[in-house]
Length: 134
Image (tube, rainbow, N blue to C red):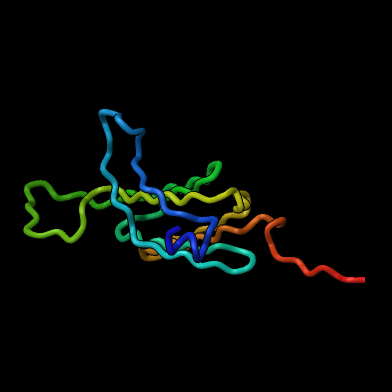
């Protein structure tokens, strides 16, 4: 069992590519840095996507997974040669799997200065409840 599964058992990491395995036009992606937090009501995901604007961002919540795809808007000028580059000029992709504990209709996201903050609310059935004893 990984450390992430120990801390947050319903979210786990999964490597991702933008097309199916074995496809001839496989696009290389970069896994962005991210953090996951948990409260009794919601999972919080912070993803660092430098150079990505709202127009280049795609979030999808499907059965059992949450996916972030970010494409940078910057294009290399014609005739320009980079001497050094800290990051690859590839789209970001992050796929988090979960055990369907997320209420997809209530997901909220905000992108500001290359930092994406996503709120993944838990289903009502999974939230802790007090039980009155009579």
